[in-house]
Amino acid sequence: QVQLVQSGAEVKKPGASVKVSCKASGYTFSTSAMHWVRQAPGQRPEWMGWINAGSGNTKYSQKFQGRLTIARDTSASTVYMELSSLMSEDTATYFCGRSGGGPWGPSDYSDYWGQGTRVTVSS
Amino acid sequence: DIVMTQSPDSLAVSLGERATVNCKSSQSLLYLSNNKNYLGWYQQKPGQPPKLLIYWASTRESGVPDRFSGSGSGTDFTLTISSLQAEDVAVYYCQQYYDTPLTFGQGTKVEIK
Image (cartoon, rainbow over all chains, first blue to last red; front, side):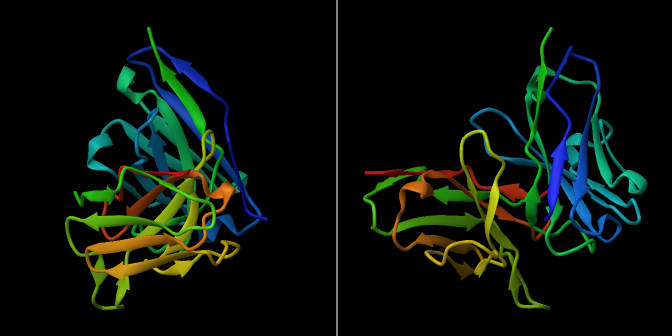
């Protein structure tokens, strides 16, 4: 069965970077794609970006351009999300979500999700 | 960015009764070349990730009970729970994936009356 397992909770100081991993299993990783979505407490989910797991092509939300890097390691079936120059407003739970329709582009829903990684930014 | 607006923000429905959640987009989500609406519905319970219920506006995800249905086209969409069960208490979000950045509605909290 499809599973996405994310790395554990992080506490970071303002200005630091955080890297969250999402390990996939139960399907062919290299012919898939992944979204990253975050959700601040009590807020709606917010889309951050997308990666084609096979080609490594990415698409980022303009909001995070310059601060966000999404990458993958096909040998480990793992996708990474790194956010730099952290601010208190980046405190949120970060989710990976598999593209349900395949790797063709970011215009796609997410059919399986990781359990979430809580990131707290505090001095 | 495409703005997604849901109504109501919350609703309380008796067990076994119908619950209806509405979602309106600031521009059409209908892609004319394939006649598909790029709209999904998710259910989220506290401490859990969103769960996909409906995609392409009306296609039920595998394993989702048939009391959940989606309808609508263009800019106006509806999620209907035909007979509310206790386990349906959750927040429901619509999401457009027509264009990046993908965007979500503000959520509708469904409770038992």
